[in-house]
Image (cartoon, rainbow, N blue to C red; front, side, top):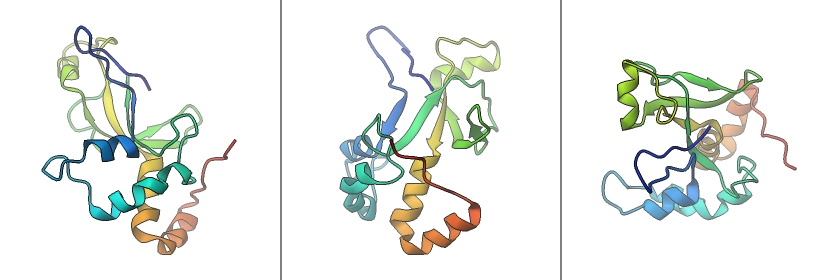
Length: 143
């Protein structure tokens, strides 16, 4: 997981958060956040899915995986084989990587698994607990 600089004086941070999503909310496409999520957002930092280093629930992340068209929906796993996200896109500058890998700008875009789990709990509440248990999902250990 790492950010990148697509051009001079521009730095794309490697992670986005619920607070960042809310800050970009305009009410007009493509920056529409559903009312239920806007209402739940203030409680996200205290969620069991929040990353203590970020102080919030991470929404998405950039990584230097070499992806191509058709990789959307692919699992993203960490070094322990744990699902940490779902790949869904790549940055615009990465399109050229179909012809040659450039580690300076090669970034795929993934939804963070903790955000997906937070969404499940936020939108479905107690009903989500059974599904989480059935899937064997457990919250990360808190420091």
